[in-house]
Length: 187
Image 1: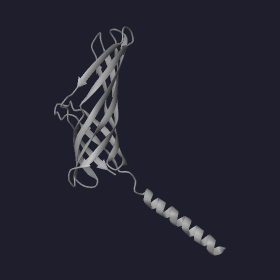
Image 2: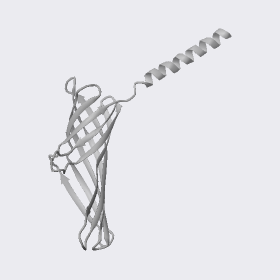
Image 3: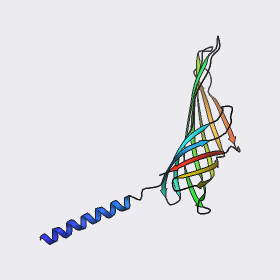
Image 4: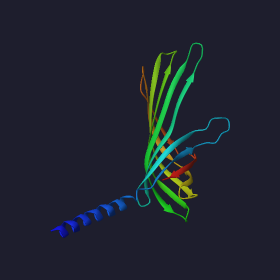
């Protein structure tokens, strides 16, 4: 009976140890910064991203596209505003060589803006949804660091909701040549 309990305990400990050893192979993750323009006059836009591996060569990506606080002060007419945007998507990767990967996949983003004008004593809330397709290259310098370049052509649909007046809708097909440069830290 004691041998049976010893074998059972040993088997349970081995099972726990090996399941823990397998769980240590956690999904790959990346975090980094992206720059959509390099302008030495101070008008650079940047955002952050987080990527988590779901399974072989498939990652979920979350981007914090932009945010801003803007204001204009005049004698009679001052205005202040806030803008926030974020995106989520999925990317598939394909190795082109030992350090270079091509990635692609859909991405969905949402931008919200709020602006208040003193002269009209009114405010405007704007919402813009966008569907894009990510195309990018990532070069890994080491196991921990990578640099990437990508573009995201897409279509957006938005609406403005003024505090007084009619709702205004916008449709924009933005097949632009905007390029994002990024630096990623892998862990």
